[in-house]
Amino acid sequence: MYLIKTPFWLRALYPSCTWRIPNKEKVIYLSFDDGPHPTATPFVLEQLAKYNAKASFFCIGKNVAAYPFIFDQIIKEGHAVGNHTQNHLNGWSTKTETYIQNIELAAEKISSNLFRPPYGRITSAQIKQLKKNPNLPQHIVMWDVLSGDFDISITGEQCTRNVIKHAKSGSIIVFHDSTKAWDRMSVALPKVLSHFKQEGYEFRVIV
Image (cartoon, rainbow, N blue to C red):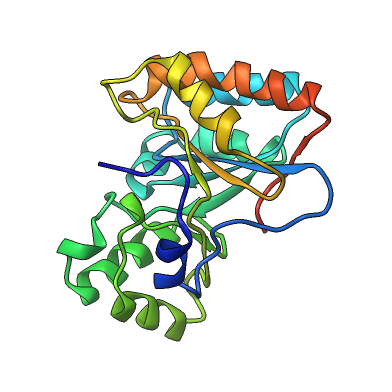
């Protein structure tokens, strides 16, 4: 069970987190979770380059360690990177001390002030501890629209519709550069980029 469009009541539960970035211009913020990935991430970078689009990649520390050259390519091509923990931990089922240590481990390889909790699951105690440490990312980024590319029960076409129907200026959109999402993301991303570019939108990084 997941919600494509983040409702107000959910945003209100985590007021210190960024869910969307209001903008009077036509601007959308694409984000990609769980990489770097040897197949998916290069594909994403290629598609972004075609449309002169920038995006934000929330990376898992162990994947950065496995594919450092792809991580470096993300940065070299002008995209933003963020911390997504070392091992993709679920904050709701992880002790606060363990969770913060896992973020610290990822931060050794990911120099960024951006953090996205895997599954969007983080406790108020974990947020408090994170904010106490100035050496760890302080900007907690959630999302406005989920593409649903992680859902193996839907198609790439449905993912495309999910984004096109719900995204608007200021939306933070989540895709995944991962094995699980590949079949759907690889179909949806080019169509989403094409659609919004034709509508006059820019794609910028989250800062």
